[in-house]
Image 1 (cartoon, rainbow, N blue to C red):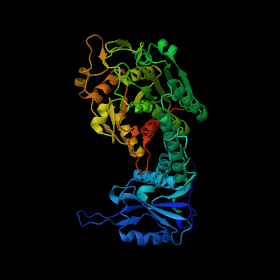
Image 2 (image 1 turned 30 degrees about the horizontal axis):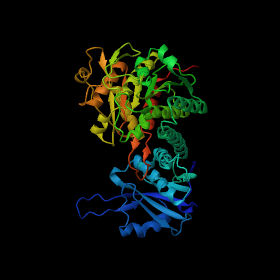
Image 3 (image 1 turned 180 degrees about the vertical axis):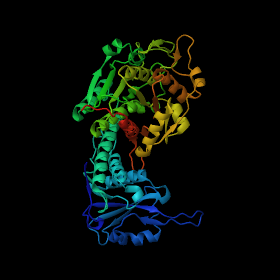
Image 4 (image 1 turned 45 degrees about the vertical axis):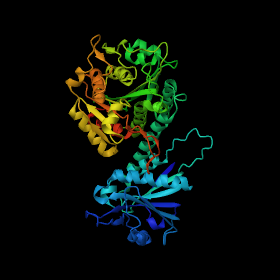
Length: 511
């Protein structure tokens, strides 16, 4: 998709489709309160073209609500699409992101291949560039469709997306933010494309190849190892998951080392990369098992984030580690009751072979520390218990360090992604103590998301660490106006911004 930013008056823009946001300014409450939609555009010709329909009450400016006008009077654009941002008091830059995605998804099935999205005239929604970045991110998210393997697939991709900014805007700030949005949107879609691949197409080996190809393209260091390296590092937990599959595992190690940076924090991104999860000997029910191709979404998020980090060039060294394997039942698969020895030396009693993600992450976290990580963040489609707790709205977040989590929470203000912090505690760790070994890989039904986090905590130990359980939000179950059903790419934006938060701490550079 070609992207650009323009500063021409809206009424003079010649476009197949011009999308302009609107908000509901009604503040009264009660059954008699009627929506009061207002167009967020300074162009008087555009306002005049929409005045009648806005006054009619037909359009209420609800979040992602749309209304199309053909041949709008006085405009060079062939069509004018009004996109609602919802109540004015609640509208944010994240509303702009979704509105841009909504405009793109509105255009795609109608054969419209080029569109212009007008930034809101409201300074709170577009000042200093966040609106421009959010808009282009939303456009990329909206343009993605999962129908890769349909034999009758018709390419409906948007060819050109232009952000129209007010002429008096700070052009340098808008252009810089817009350029960032392109990188972030492309990186999120790269992660989504990985998650979308079926298990027979994206094996652990192929995931490693895709990561290495991306790394070569953007200038990121990447090494991909397999079985011999796992044995050399004594990654018994990671290997135990892969031993039941004919497909070899892949240990993907990415290094971003900006020129001149020699000190400061080294955050490490550790992702679960189970390219297909049958549950192993503790096999899953057949219903919905096909979706288990998405069990590498945490790893995909880390790969996508590393792509964005490399292109945006923050002054902080970053490690990326993805532990990729298939979890399959076979004569060589691990069994409930087995005891495995992790890279750290801790022994793990296997209670349920379907609690495999925490096993690969245990060795990934230990390896990240060995490579010099000072801070850890992991992402995984780890537990159904987190979905029970938070539904398919928020992802779960855990942390052993309040300052590290505060930095992540600040990142959410930029990313717009929804995470909810859940607790840790010794009482939960007690639930996974083993009588035959050091630790069990599951503590039973109650508090399952928390005991899974405490399992990982045992391997992160005292290193500042965040765990993201994205099981409920890594796959969009039903299409929304701004995003298609399928992989969401959750985590890429938030992890990127968390990493950028370390940049100020890396102050010593080569002279």
